[in-house]
Length: 163
Image (cartoon, helix red, strand yellow):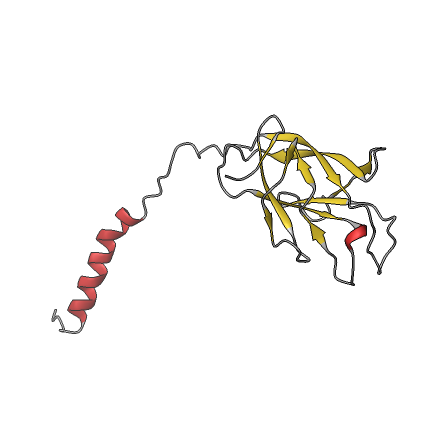
């Protein structure tokens, strides 16, 4: 039997591949998958003070005040209820994931207030907003249509301004 030079490298390659294959096919992994911790959830009281005068020119000033939080899914916003005091709106948000002590970005929260609507683009505010007993003082984009406040929430449902 005569070996050709072109077949020898091919055979050597096939033999080395066959010898290496069993080491590559070892399918071992962790015995137990890591446990993914579920976030602690809490309920948070919301209070919003509406300005005294309605400047709305596009929709009725009698529309409801609505609260939005960045942890909420679309459609999860809540409508606040007037609490009997002049221009005070309140509500309770359930299922808020705890993020305090800070372990990431603060939540972004905002209010849709019919009194503040001046054109066809919805205007949101983060001012005059208390979350979990904390008056929020860190407001991003003040005066813009997409204004929002930042807050951390502890396991007791208390709000905390970012440091």
